[in-house]
Amino acid sequence: MNETTAPSVHAEAARLPQDLAGCRVVLTAQRRADEFAAALERRGATVVHAPTLSHIPHVDDPELIARTGELIDNPPDVVIVTTGVGFRGWMEAADAAGQSDALLAVLENARFIARGPKARGALQREGLTVDWTAESETAQEIKERLQDEGVAGLRVAVQHHGAGSDGLDEMLRRGGADVAPLIVYRWGPAPDPVAVEAAVDIVARRDADCIAFTSAPGAHAFLEAAERAGVRDLVLDAMRDGDVLAAAVGDTTAAPLREHDIDPLVPERFRMGALVRAIVFALKARRSPALVTPAGLLELTRDQALLDGDVLPLAPSSLAVLRKLMAAEGSVVPREELLTVLPGAGDAHSVEVAVARLREALASKESVVTVIKRGYRLEVLDA
Image 1 (cartoon, rainbow, N blue to C red):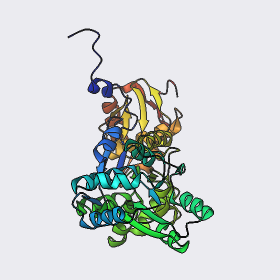
Image 2 (cartoon, rainbow, N blue to C red):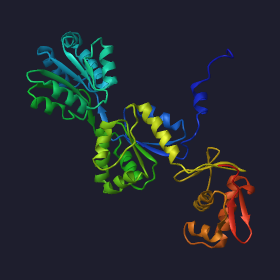
Image 3 (tube, rainbow, N blue to C red):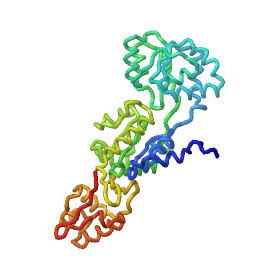
Image 4 (cartoon, helix red, strand yellow):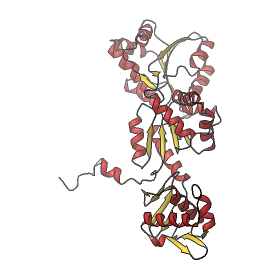
């Protein structure tokens, strides 16, 4: 092989910093879930898959095909496209039904409104001209635009996502429009209800660092699952308090969470890649400061300790002692204080055992210093 051959994807991934090692992230999406998970796992995160809804295929949807035929027979004046994937799915369904040529012929004479750049891009790939784009990617911006312009007497086709109209159909009808809704892909039940129940329990117990949502219906479904499990308040409190970081791909997805006084992390650009980057940045910022010791770089996560990015094999008692020592940042911690953080009942000997096992895990006696008649301290070389 030529020496200048580019490094493999695996080699590139191996060089990524493991700055999410020890973090657990719950993913509620089905679509592109593997891609989403891989981006987080390459940074060391543990991903819990719990898709709250499934996608029902659109190609053989008789209702969608019938609605498409009605548009061909009675062409629209305006077409609102809410999602790029939805518009592409509509074109695929029309092609499978032998309707694509006739549909594109009537659409060429319509005015197109896109909810965001992805919807605009999907239209442009079909050679269609977009008249206006809602840069905020919200149905609200479309409503405000059309209310200002007026829609009385217009036939308006609206391509919806699986959750339905976002109030668009109702607003258009109130304005006097003839509305032709098209639900291109539909939401079905969770593909693995047991996985969703387990994820609800993890969040209720605050055993996750983050839960990510990529659709408003998915967020609704997760909260409904928490209600069925009888832990809805625990789940809401975990996200409100920030112990479990709630993250949403955009404002539309965030809306069901905000209705419950949860302030989710939302990236500036409503894209999955931007959401991944925002999650990585936020979880890194939540960690305790790393400390340099003779053993190496020590970091704490929610329930683990890392030495140079690798998880330390520590029993709960030794982990509790390490947390206390790291919080002191090199100052002496009396044995009596260490005794208070040990799980269960203990005595001075329990502290000695926990410290001994900590030193063994660190492979460095110099990192935890015994201060005669006082206690112990962590040997900190730098912050």
